[in-house]
Amino acid sequence: QVQLIESGGGLVQAGGSLRLSCAASGRTFSTYNMGWFRQAPGKEREFVAFITWTSTLTDYGDSVKGRFTISRDNAKNTLYLQMNRLKPEDTATYFCAGRIPAPSSLRSSSTYNYWGQGTQVTVAS
Image (cartoon, rainbow, N blue to C red):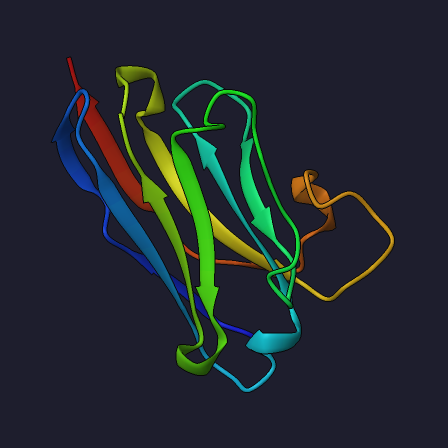
């Protein structure tokens, strides 16, 4: 069992930056593939980024590629999402999620076993 707690959200002006953190409990964090998803009001949950448990592979949604960077520190049981050049359309609740390695798409939210409660990011124009 893994518990995930996001932090770092807030209000920022367009063009600004934020860094989200996701603190994980338990000693199995280092063996989990991790992802970030977001959901805006009235919209479906959207894939943002994932990182494998060894950090050897990352991937990003098209809308954030080149602006966001996912990383992890397994010694600190923490996942990060550095968000630069933020746009108003990045406004959403951001969730971190974890799953055991498995042969299924890391872009699909339905394949993740554990979820945090979310942190709100609001980008003002």
